[in-house]
Image (cartoon, rainbow, N blue to C red; front, side, top):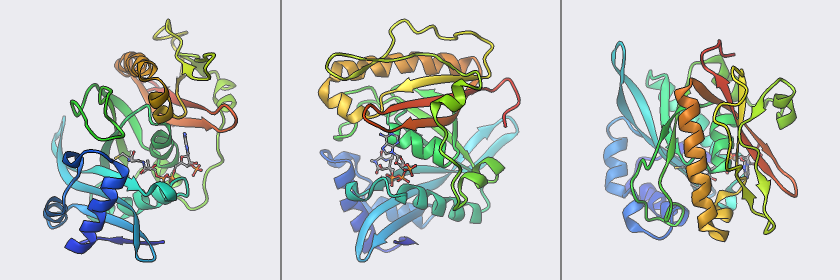
Length: 288
Ligand SMILES: CC(C)(COP(=O)(O)OP(=O)(O)OC[C@H]1O[C@@H](n2cnc3c(N)ncnc32)[C@H](O)[C@@H]1OP(=O)(O)O)[C@@H](O)C(=O)NCCC(=O)NCCS
């Protein structure tokens, strides 16, 4: 794969076309060439991945300002990352984000933020487990009503993640030699409790435990929150159940973040019945 910064209108037209493939169904959700060009001419970064002549992935973001207790501070806001459906699960999302990390560090910044749907297990795996981003901010209905094929029909709740570029945590996750994959047992044997143990319904769909206590067995250094392993499939099989998951996890994450917990890891257990779990650390204790 050829990974490079994109700056010509022709390259940006290819990005537009790829956006239409990744977020099908509504033209208003597309960032057009003129906006891509204006942003990249003013400190933004549009990075593409090519297989031969074909653009198969991109990541796009822009510089921004965040308010902190010590005053306004510059950051980078990553707005979109999209991989051609035939090129997913091959490490391309990771490679593009690592290129973004290099470009933004080169601009002298140390913080990239972005949002994603917390029920998208693959995105969670990439953002939290592979890249080492952390999250303690839940944004209900962040984008209002969305119309594209990925998001239509559900409240557009989002995690806002923080990617602290110069931390040992992130530098270690970005090394070419990957850390060993951790399974759920690794965390439960360390004393982590599962907040919302889910069960399979007769139709094979995973259902959340309706009466999950919000803060079981506190104080607990680690907590685990289960999500569906394939939310798009669950949503198309049962929009009602998808809404149940949205509201169930909204309640849990809002409560846990308010109590000081931080999402610090993610476990995906593939197999005949795959399962997906966020790991949250008690932010009131020292984090490692
Ligand atoms: C999210 C996206 C950018 C990820 O790109 P990608 O190239 O597939 O990412 P990677 O291959 O680097 O990482 C994905 C990881 O998730 C794993 N994975 C696959 N299915 C999974 C699932 N259901 N649950 C959890 N992890 C899963 C992959 O195996 C891979 O991990 P591995 O490297 O340990 O094998 C891509 O899937 C995409 O374009 N999605 C649609 C648009 C989108 O959601 N964009 C992001 C928000 S703007």
